[in-house]
Image (cartoon, rainbow over all chains, first blue to last red; front, side, top):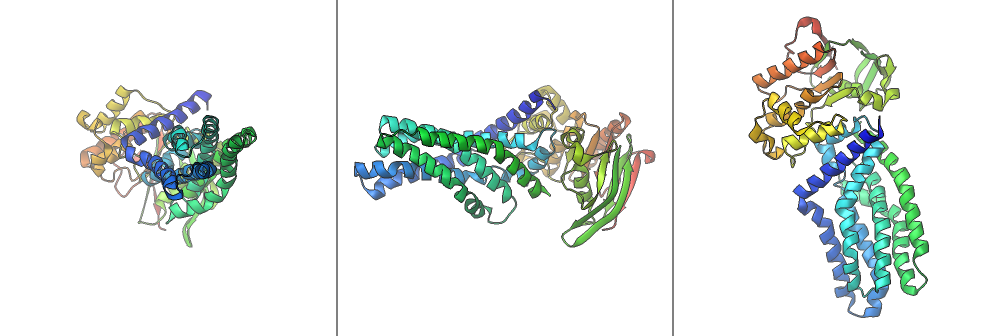
Length: 227
Length: 206
């Protein structure tokens, strides 16, 4: 098993998933629209008071990003499970965990990256300043891949189970809590003038930890689902 | 050589088979037959390592497949009863993506030749797979056999949905594989039209 063939398999999975997302743009766009709508509804509901919007902004944007990620989780493995591609993936001559990284990376590129790119625009609706917008982007850049990694474990665990959408939410939402606290905390700290570095470091640590642990847990869950 | 040693398998409360011993030598095919629910697919999945046996072991070249892990996966081509193709991709994209996943990347031309060999004409190569018939989808899945260099083929009902001509083409491909020193396990309800000396039949009674 060589490094190049491992990279070939991972890049093949990413290319295929991106191609599939291009062929089904509506699926990929759903979570982004969800984020935009949720984030836009809050200023309408709470009122136009700038101080209030600035206070709730980081939390609302982070919760919206988290729910948008949750919405797309069911697509990570379900289609591959139903059409038999997952069986082929499990039987390739590479560690399954490495392929899981490819799947999750593709999921993040399709569902997470658009959230990161849109966040400055949404942040403006809440009156966030330039520096806070930068911290918001940075926190989402570190946090959304972690959400995808943790979410993949849940998505794999509920594979083939009836009502899996609700179950996956119940499984992963408690695990998302630290990411939400650190992410929203980073932006709030930056707004308070104490800088968001500490929270961003914690988000970075969570990302590294999830990169090491989540693929193995997901791979084990996928094998169990296929038995 | 593929060998099953004292295999036992249950699904739920039901015992499918117990103390199953079988040996498949290079150049031969094991045709697994039996009634619906007798455990044919379960046996194939045990051979593929997708399903761990309740008891016993599967040996590849006298080594346990669960110890060989990815080294064993690199020796086999598995085509299950699900075709493993994406409806939104074309047959060409599906085949190239499957081969790249299997660690045997193929060229555009190679994939086209494989699809033609199994009777899928060029205009079909660029259609989304969702518009293909069941038989054509099965052909897309089986086209991998023309590109596979792995010695062990595990095929679950390969002839389902295929017409007589395609069945003959796949059987011929199987024979070529055996003549090159490969081996195969085929779960089937149909008679495999191969020389008698190359076919070993295993009937599961459930």
